[in-house]
Amino acid sequence: MNSLQAWRALPAAQQPEWPDAGAVQAAAAQLRTFPPLVFAGECDSLKARLADVAAGRAFFLQGGDCAETFNGVGADALRNKLRTILQMSVILTYAGSMPVVKVGRIAGQYAKPRSKPTEVRDGVELPAYRGDAVNGFPFTPEDRTPDPDRLVRMYHSSAATLNLARAFVVGGEADLRQVHAWNTDFVRDSPVGERYDRMARDIDRAISFMHACGADPAEFHSVDFYASHEALLLDYEEALTRIDSRTGLPYDTSGHFLWIGERTRQLDGAHLEFARHIRNPVGVKLGPTTTPQDALTLIERLDPDREPGRLTFITRMGAGRIRDALPELVEKVTASGASVAWVCDPMHGNTFEAPNGYKTRRFDDVLDEVEGFFEVHRALGTVPGGLHVELTGDEVTECVGGGHALAEADLVHRYETVCDPRLNRAQSLELAFLVAEMLHRP
Image (cartoon, rainbow, N blue to C red; front, top):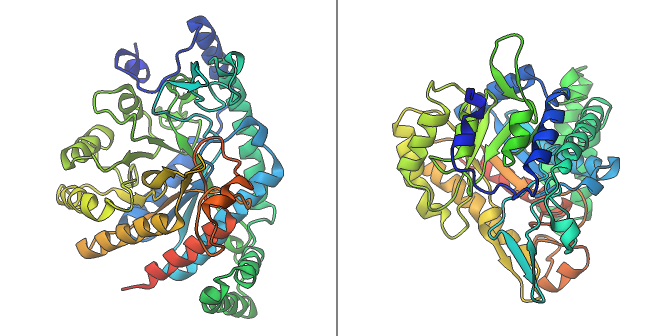
């Protein structure tokens, strides 16, 4: 067994109960013959950008679907999602006077951990839906049976998504003046648009001034955009790991940036063991039960050489816990001399079920957790490095609140997620403007 297979000797949480082990091996064998989805050099470039994030020289913005679906692979949905992320990045770049590292939860986010392995409806018990990479969403025995052929379909869907994303960001969709024009539309149409009008006009004047001076750099017309997902299905991740011809080192070519979730970050578990051996930049989700010793052990396992940009800690504490749970973690990690990028996930700790049965999040809770994240880092003199948000470019009704004051009764209108609720375009841009105000504060 080589180092990339060492995880197989350890307990692997949140893996599907595949009915046919031979079919899993056949799917993995097929995946090993496919071209890489990303390249080692791109992963190294992102690692260098993340080193800037950890040092306070850049801000990290990661956004996209809670769970991608095969049926959701298409130009319109992806364009709207990319537009939203690019719009947010323009706001944050101007406010922070620093580059924004743009990362999508795209081209691989097809699997999700679940709190229970099965679901019961009307006395019928079936396997829980674990994402399109594993089984289908309809509540039937045929759909809910894990199917390893879906791993191959995940690869092809991810490849199609990446091809579209690359075409958009170099084909005019990322042009700075065009992206800012979309923000101007938001300011005009939003119920809270007056609040953001001054910043929007300042950005517009700055862009116009640079163009009047003859400044038209390539960065105005295209951007670097990276793909990320949770490295959950280890058979898939191992099969897409390649040895880089330049360095002889292993990279998981399923995505540029991979993270380990709160439910799979066991210190003696398979996910941590797998991530130890790949050279991608990696993240770890830290919930409110994380101890300082947990964080220090994660650093020793995942970043023993203290490589700049290698490790990102993504905190997901909940609005009610962030101010109490985060300070000691940041203090102890900083005292250890480790340089990690600290990123706030204000979504996963703030989920609740509305009386009408819909899983949702309050915009005010999301915002409060981000404010708490900034407050803690400012008090400690450390760097609030970025934001990790579940969002869509469509006007769904999945999270309550925001400028349009979506109520719980509105959830029924366009609740389209197959897993967790996402911020819609208006809520995402409102959040960006509010975070921009935090970046302005001393």
